[in-house]
Amino acid sequence: MENTIAIVTGASSGIGAAIARTLTEAGATVIGTSRTRADFASLDVMDAASCDALVRDMLAEHGRIDLLVNNAGFAQIGGFDVFTEAEIRAAFETNLFGAMRMTRAVLPAMRAAGTGRIVNICSVVSYLPAPFMGAYAASKHALQGFSTSLDHELRGTGLRSLAVRPGFMRTDIGTNTLSAARTVEGAERVRRAVETSLTRADNPQVVARVVHRLAIHPNPPAVSDAGREASLLNRLHSLLPGRVFDRALRRNFGLS
Image (cartoon, rainbow, N blue to C red; front, side):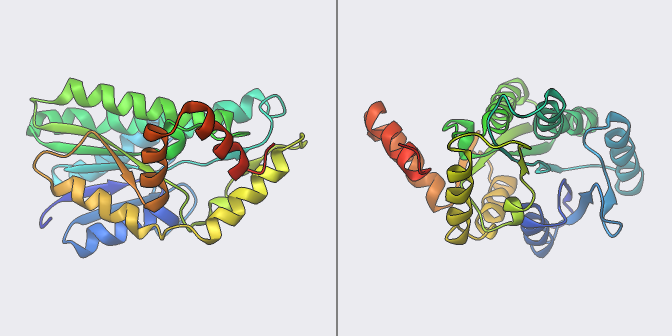
């Protein structure tokens, strides 16, 4: 990846930090962004002007952008009707529209160069919606749909749009998850199940390795799973009857 110029959003911790570190170790010049950390490039993906300014500055400094990793995002756990409309919109503004804004900002330069890759960090909830995560699951489902649709649009131009679906990772998502102000039956059991899963989850480095592989692969798949849990769930979802998988999913989250 020598001479590769990469932007990684949400790079101050967790999966984003692992991706930025792995790409740097592979020889790329990585611009890691954060909304709050002063030691990272400043970026608020909810603000189109902020996205445009970052890309404009990076192009002025480096002349091109070869790789964009849309990683910035946050989760929500709680009853759907308990979250406010503003909180639900915030999930989409960050997880979906933030990725769209950054993609829109880098595409003109990538098209002009005739090369470039956009990697969108989705989730297993892109296709296996977890209970009490309605807005989060919907935003990640939409992000995968956007990514794969855009990939069809870009093929043949030298550009690719690729989706990565991690399972639970050992990150601080537990502390960075927005909880509903008022709990409803079952939501707390799901939260505890998620916290338990995080203790035995994969290291985010496994996601970073997938992103690195996609960045250098001559013909990468449009959608890739990352981690043991994601791969296992994909296989089980394909092989098990729907009712059996549904019962197992509910049992895993502590629901009857």
